[in-house]
Length: 252
Image (tube, one colour):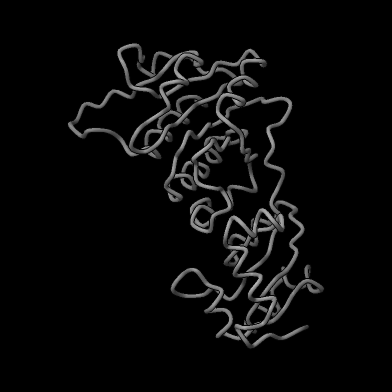
């Protein structure tokens, strides 16, 4: 097994670049950090392109499975690769899956309209996974799902559901072609209490920007716009919390 002890090694420089969207898009790959995420990838049948491990992981079953793609690295290199304060001694380069809009959408779909915070995006994807959604559609202005902060927040959920990148209008049109309702979250006089809506097998749920909310132009394309009644006195709910409440209602 090859051993790398210098942070200036070309393979390490490439791995660092894969934490940016520019190089992810160019190479069709992204970076995974930590045994948990890598284990989830392997369970999902992802063919890892490269595996970097410190000495204490050399007998791990994942390393045995991907021995030909494995490289041992020094602790110094591991610390250099780690985005977290304490490196976990295992890193991988994984292929980015197809993120194009499929010809047919069935099941529950979360549509993210300009949701900018990576932590929120990752949390919503993870919650969609927990709620049994089929996939998440990443709209224009929404944080790239393979951003390292999003990847950490997803906690491996990208391996359990479909991630799609498409304009909201295209996604809505596709759902409507399936005769599926599409629900918005624009708070206005026409918005209805989400609890009055009966779940269906296939549907879309739009969550808008943390500050500005859903694009008002989309409201004319939705089946209904939903509101979550708030008995307390906060100005609003966190976008990820609101998304979680609505998602679990629709799969109840």
